[in-house]
Image (cartoon, rainbow, N blue to C red; front, top):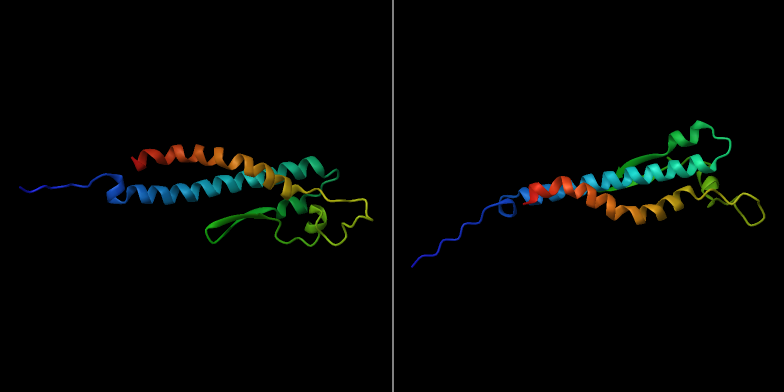
Length: 126
């Protein structure tokens, strides 16, 4: 008696692995895009007399397999964030904390954003 097992489908032909890699990339892009939107929203709500320069420097870049939202190391960025040496208890300006508030909000949003992106890739994984 001979038993023949035929393995077929997305798990065995590589489609699921390929789709999961593409999903991860798309989810990272989506979450980073939302992080950027959160930072910009915070800046727009906080800065009373905005000049466009700082906001045009905020960007999303790939760092290896990660995504990073940053201000291209604008020299006064730490002061605006409230982490610079000039944001001491003696000064009245404590910073906007735009990036830190955006990150805290993004922690709450990331799972839902990723699940939404996953729906586009699930059919290819079945």
